[in-house]
Image (cartoon, rainbow, N blue to C red; front, side, top):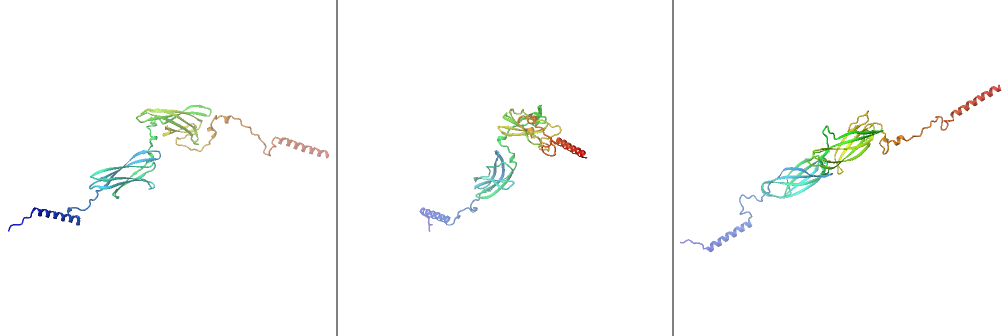
Length: 345
């Protein structure tokens, strides 16, 4: 008996039937043709916060802007919807000062990713900067850094390479007696300014304020232009002020550039030979004469004639000049009465 050989049409029909059955199996039984090593949906790769760096990125008179760089490490399969939240918490009160959210998006590959954001906080005290990482709204890691001493940051308008020089033999302030006359003394206050930068600095001025040491009353106040100071040089400027003599004073100098305070210096002047006042002494119990610090000619009040006082007896008002006359009349009357009595006898 000869074997039955299927025809070409039969083979095609059988192949088509197998394909239909396989397709039906895939629809009816999901995963029927899946790899035996397939564990289901792929999980996102791990994301870790490996470092946080903080840098100053701008200072004003009231605020400081901090740039916070968070470095994320990603490994394995892609991680979608990655978010970084950065907060600044007041280190003293624990209150939230500001918060920023950065949408990082999708992370892929085995690599690190730097995420930067800016936080603007008041320029005072310290802060705790907290960084939290989320993957698909799920918290996966967090870290923190402490920032302190923001009040020491100098705004750009107050930054300068010029300051009062202080090199031992070259004091920031030196005071000399320029002249004396009557009860007034003229002081020459010399300020030494040093430019530690690489460029010349101009538009500088020095304000000199002289206060009486014991009372803290301002005796003189003068501002002089300091001109330009070349790089690496020490310049000087002098201001003459006239104050009452034989008193002790505190001299304060303020270095200004376009009206902004750059630096300060102080010293003491002892014109009273019986007292010594240090530059930091501002109070002392002594007798204070306000007339010494009045405006105008200091000798007018002193040279003006004063009315003489009239002495009167303590017996009563108006009888001081008549008292001797009244006493003489009383004695005469008494003598007359005695003589009349003698005649009658």
